[in-house]
Length: 319
Picture 1 (cartoon, rainbow, N blue to C red):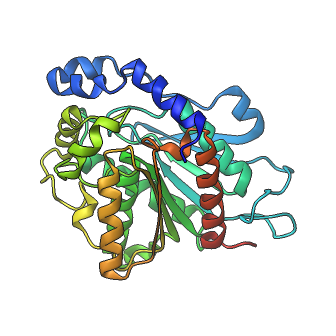
Picture 2: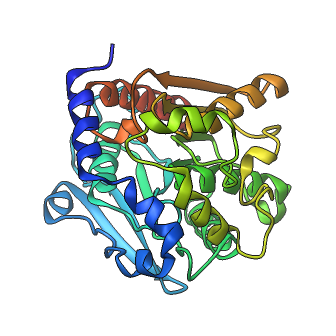
């Protein structure tokens, strides 16, 4: 049964009218961009807890979060006391329909990830639409991936993202695979996809039935943002919509989505593709939960976090 906090949060989100912003994007895209907030930055409290560094790459910020030297060992299986320090890295690609910046919600989730696992997390604030498109976001994400691989040769890298960032994470994994190891670029050790947006056509017929229960997303507007992201590329290009690619040759995937999320249609299709291709994918579908629920601090979120921490521990090595 859906927890009371989850039900109350869904009601609160519905009352704020958040979904209208997606419908308005289709009617008035310039105004939607003008209302876009500035990206959130790591808070002073987070900086006191973790080691936070940043750099500018091609005009865009890239943050790195790491445990502070001398911090206590992680609590979970992903580096429990006595198992040694973590040397792996997670590249986290934030959601926001490719047009909205990173939020405080993301930073709080990432702080918990670092504290629980002891892993280093790199967070690129990648180019957003409509000023930029998939070609630029993909190239930037690939450059960050390559830089992380070169900075710590041999250390495992996991890719992780929510919503649009989940789509970009899967697309990036496919593009790394397509390099065929060129330039000694290793493939990712694993992927964590949280309510990923994997098909920007938003054409799956089941989404119309799910939409009335979705308190965050509406197909009108989301379609417009998908066209912005595609730019000059076809909407079904696997770099834009990775559901149209293949999972063969990719590492294990941990996939999370709620049933009250129009993107559950994408998650279910990805799980079906994995079964058809015998690709390693574990799918966790939470009844009654909304978009990106693992980030929201709910009881169901804590269960998802525990699975994510364990998955990263298994994929990145336990010391």
